[in-house]
Image 1 (cartoon, rainbow, N blue to C red):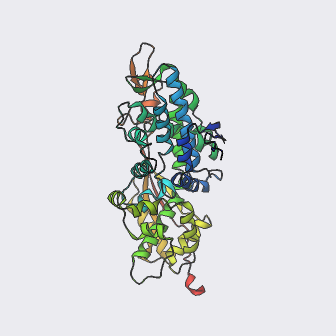
Image 2: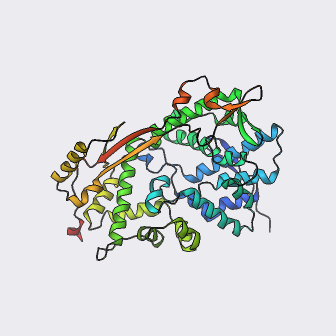
Image 3: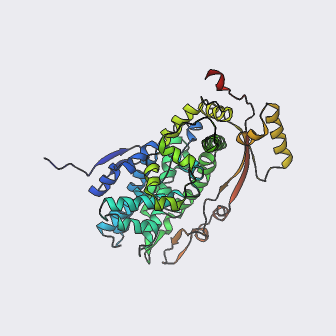
Length: 420
């Protein structure tokens, strides 16, 4: 029997051809943990704003792996010793960096789990895969968690100029049609270099980095924190909140949910639970966007008026209205919105599901976390904020906050009990 060819070439709309360069990378792509990412959209509910935003975490992870391969080639071409095991491990680490995302990615991260970041679940799943592959992922894990002695590998995986951000800005801009997402990733990668095993950018790449930072700021306001996306995401969170309340309430009408999904609705699952009980890992790796959408369609027929109304509104794109402000909203405004909902016949104990406050923050560059370092022609290394002649680079370090309140401006509670 012929040995299957595991060195594949894939056609990607953003980069053209992407190569899966080793058998281990191929086997990881084929693994059910990674294939699940096909069923998790990259941008959650952004398709409610940008109809083309239908790409998945699967696309993104492959793109980031491709960029990592380019970065390895660039650094090797500049005389830095990076062996084949390190190249493969770096690609594995970035390929699996999002494997811990749950349904709707960031939208439900704090809703389904009890303060468990997706990076922690990614690390747990990588350890699980490492056992399944007889320790072949050990080096990749060290790069991912920052314990490998060559720090630039971790910087390429997770920093303010990493392969993750380079891919999602380009990819999200492509699929949404927002031209500001185009960042010239190939040029930035060609400008990468190392000083004392730490990542730097050659001085002639300053303009590309400036464009990258500006693109990130614009993409956050135009795509990731778009006001319509905030409304849709707020509704989804309230749907899950109501379903969880009903499931946990004794005597309430049963709320349908597949067993893996029900576990996370019934329980407050912590990182310690994941670490000590394989049940939660198994359940989590069976969850994707399809589970949530199927439940939303079922819950639209539930006798609970809050749950059915929210679900039907989201299905029909009858979204909340939203108001944005640079300052927190006055109590008088919130009281008036509550009174509007009361006048529509909404009882006090239901108001919080149809009136949501929050804040969105955006900072394109945070030098306090880690630096984007520029290597001058003299060999001196300085921060991009000091190297750039654009005054707005310093401005990009400021955290911008926008407060929002969204509410159901027009509301008729659905009473499905009459049809039961």
